[in-house]
Length: 119
Image 1 (cartoon, rainbow, N blue to C red):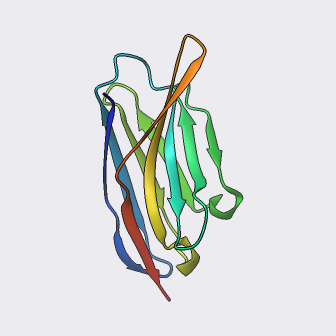
Image 2 (image 1 turned 135 degrees about the horizontal axis):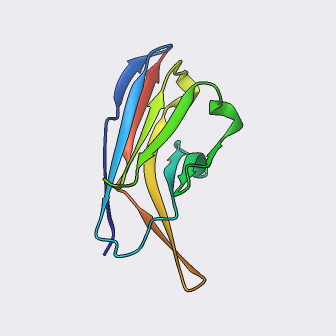
Image 3 (image 1 turned 120 degrees about the horizontal axis):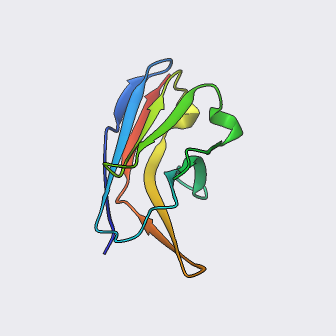
């Protein structure tokens, strides 16, 4: 059973920074893609950023230039560095891991961590 443990959320003023970490464990297979999604109250969950096992990255347009995602394959961890935070970044942030085995994709989710940006 794959487990994702998140840390690093909190309250910050607009323009500030936060660093989210996610540690993955329990997978006998390579995590193909790992990243972060977020969900604000009344909104759909949306992709924030993700990174492949080959270090290719994908960012939401709203965070490009402000957020940076990185991963340590040896430690199975992913870090989201968030700079220049805005009130609209306020949401619950969820770590997501995608594992493909024999052509079938499995998605795993963390429990979520709250990020609140005050104006």
